[in-house]
Length: 191
Length: 239
Image (cartoon, rainbow over all chains, first blue to last red; front, side):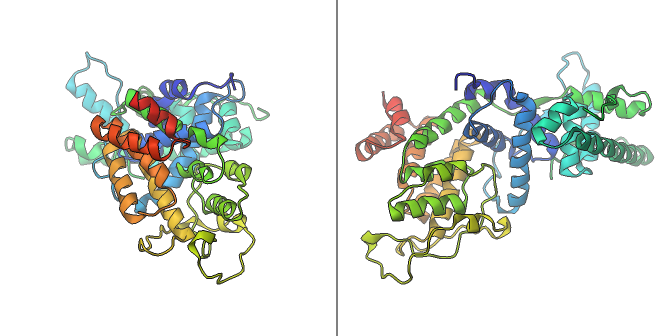
């Protein structure tokens, strides 16, 4: 028991990571606070995180993946969340960045999110963890309880699909030639 | 590890287009806006405290453990059969995995509550929670039976689900949590989970800063349920 990372410390250390991962999986911004809470409650109920057994981030990511899959199935039953706070991804704040730079960064985020939307949940999770969070394939495999080879093959196929979707997005914007309407490019975060 | 040609991350892979690499670099450096970590941590503490005592308790306390997001008809069936037969199967309810979808309530089965003096319509079937939990989740349907009727197992599932939703909402929106708790109260005034509902209401009122109400209901809770698994955080709050 004493080796367990206390629930509060675990939350403080990784709530942002879990929120980011959920958003990248396509969970809507209104649901994120709720689901982050649920992820850490599930973590607690599983006996808490034991350092050494796994990596905290990928261990939590697996729980978050299950919780978000569950939420997708139940999405239609959600009625009362209209006024929940919205959690969203935002470009790293560089105070010196001009408004123009920030708008460009937001558009980049929107393109990434839309390209992610084209992946299956399993490939999406692996892609996000490896390409955006910098997790190692072995750690991802251990957390998801699949062979490392499966992680590689999901990753390869996710990369191909992601690049294709991204290229299509760029083409569609540049062929418009109109100044991109930033609001339409903001991540819809819908699943 | 056997298949270990290390993969160069796409953002560093020169064979990938520069624009894609640039977008990935932006995406790697994102922050999260709108998540209140202090409030979230506080809610998590209350939620854990509220379910904490349950692990060591028995009987109806099993239900609380089954509540927060991990509600399954199987767990409830186990808990209920435990109540009915006077033999709580704590270990089984605890072992049910979390974050599974809520399966539909099992076949309507009159709860065997001797005190109700219900006619013994059917021989009491031996509990088979695995059957219930093996069903697909799509047909999950919280039952809202009229308050006067004797509660059915479906009622417990509906009531438990509402309370679980309220508990989850405590993190992001105590206001919404309170609304859900009130809905639970009006839908299931004689519900089996009144004690849990009341405990969460006290904690939520406190979270909303409505101290006077929290105090009043907290005192009432302590006098009514001095042995409750939830009484400690409430006593704490009243100090």
